Length: 308
Image (tube, rainbow, N blue to C red; front, side):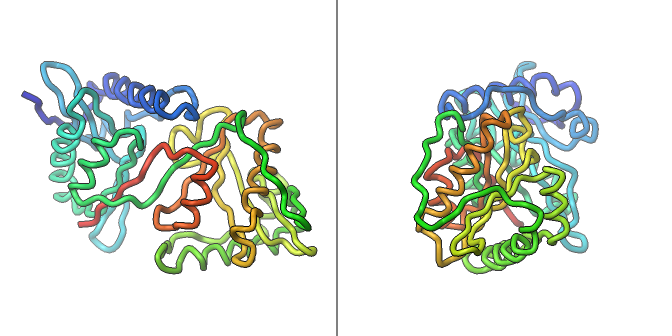
């Protein structure tokens, strides 16, 4: 009979093996995912009992751990179980996640943690379905591109593609502000995108902390793409992975091929720098982003959210 227990350090080794197994299964289905190269440590979560496990006869069947809760509003908290922070094995994953979330929910609600976020692989339909039945909805999609097999696309006429310089920073800051306005509009309604200042962008370009690429038409920048090594899950931190964290095309030039051409130009720049994979995440409510990114990238995880 499966038994629920608190996540402690004695379960760390088996939990890591489950995560590795889930990654291997995902790679079998989605060949563009990089080979397994480890996960961030779950030791702090285990020491602080931030999680629950399901076991039977000494065998770990699954676990669900979470980040330290953050305050949303006065007396109301949220938390996130990242891609590496949960997993289940065996044929009854949906049942395992039902039990795991029931146990996790009991703990979190008593701590006034009422916003629950869980990221899981897209191939694991049973787990996704189990979470949907618990009232979760998809908010974000993570996708991956193997740069070594990426096909170039034709460049629109009269459009110039190039890597940005620090002199472009004021225009890039303005376009980032336009992006924030777009993301705040219905049906996306994303409030937490904070535009970068011109000075911050200029410094990022000069230090190459971030790579910016632009598309120009008639001397004006009409689109940009920003990439860096830092991302939001363990795959984004793998060697050879670069993350697209911001991209925007002005409305007049959407569906004209500008975005695809700019992506192809950037991808060809990534390869000589030693990158083999490119990762991006986008809101599931942003239908334009879903259409664009999934034309080139393969979704590998969904982030689901429930608010109580």
